[in-house]
Amino acid sequence: MKKRIGSYPRVRIEGGGRAVVSQAGGVLLVETVRKSGLDTAISAALTPWRKARAVHDPGKILLDVALAVALGGDCLADVAMLRAEPAVFGPVASDPTVSRLIDTLAASGEKALRAIRAARAEVRPHVWRLAYREAPDAGGTVTVDLDGVLVIAHSDKEDAAPTWKRTYGHHPLMGFVDHGPGGTGEPVAALLRPGNAGSNTAADHITATQLALAQLPKKYRRGRRTLIRTDSAGGTHDFVAWLAQRGRWLSYSVGMVITEAIHQHVLKVPASAWTPAVEPDGEIRDGAWVAELTGGVLDGWPKGMRLIVRKERPHPGAQLRLTDVDGMRLTCFATNTLGRPIGELELRHRLRARAEDRIRAARATGLRNLPLHRTAQNRIWLEIVQIALDLLAWMPMLALTGKARLWEPRRLRLRLFTAAGQLVTTGRRRVLRLARHWPWTGHITAALDRLTQLPDPG
View 1 (spheres, rainbow, N blue to C red):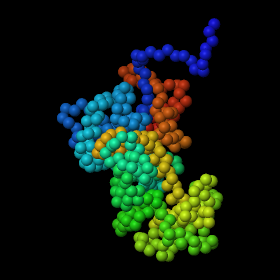
View 2: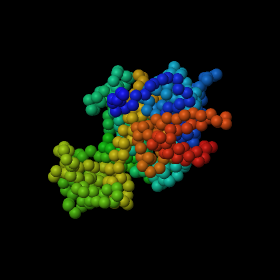
View 3: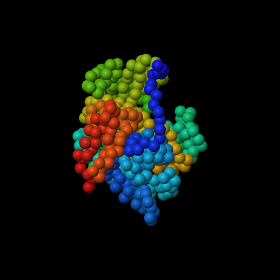
View 4: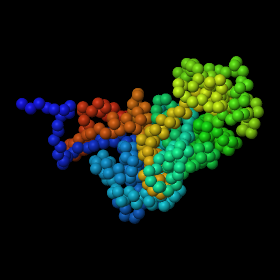
């Protein structure tokens, strides 16, 4: 009698299996596309680029690539995993057809970009209405976080250049809607820039903010209910003045560089003026205090701007800077929000760190590298990445509950999207049966039930 050697069983592999569906959990994204009306909106927007007697719709081709990216793909050819499952994803164009469409859209420049962005902006208010209390504007306000992303290039692509971190590639400026502690976040701006683009270029921040505002429902495109939040790269005179311009009236919370003037004012703040910083649960943050600076340090800045500084004991191993005081790490930000305690405003600004989570999700969803050579093509790729990230934010917002709503793309793929299924035809109907033993089959079926119960668009 032979004894089995090894930890895993031996399985004989044979090709030719039928009625087996991989990536069966991708039906969650397909149903999200259907309920949001994104397929109809993008198809209508790209109608001018549909050739006579074309077999494949340009909007469907673009959405197929976005779905492939959402499922983990990082190049145009990865749309093949959708093409292999026509029962779930329908007919999918060939690789040459996909490449020709991207080239055609890239040649159209801003016209194609505006069409794609307009379709996304048209759908977004509908999705937020479907989400109701789970929507990012459920509290009557919207927060948009702007942040730069370094995308490494491993070949000599157009506009790739040395970056400030001594790498080589591009430096896009991204914008994300903050969904708060109970959700992820959806992208609303992606401005492709060369790798040597400045971090604090006011013109780029203004352009990115304009792109972000155009994606929001109309009532949030101006007024105090919309908060623009950035790190110190946004703390420039031109950008702050643009945000506070008469008739725009946007709220802002932007980081500021600790200049010598600010440093000298901090030294003059009496001990009684420092207020303990707070945590999101309302408890006092240990070893951190905040104070508001007034006087000449505000000269030259827009009227109504407030300058708030925080001092905090540095974390173990942290490097202090010359502008830090008495062994305390100093950070500073500006805001035009009145009538709220400075501790609450400092907490609101500190929560901008959630943008780093959004960037991590973007890197895992097509932004690890820019796969195409020319800048015009990679601008289309950025729009595809944003569509994929929209779907990965909308699906949990509409269909998942509890901790599952906070799962990042990699976990969604591992637990939900990669589930296998069996396609069964019965009573002239095709039924996709998911594996009963898969630990998260219950999550998938429950999410599909919630999506099915949502009203159809239009």
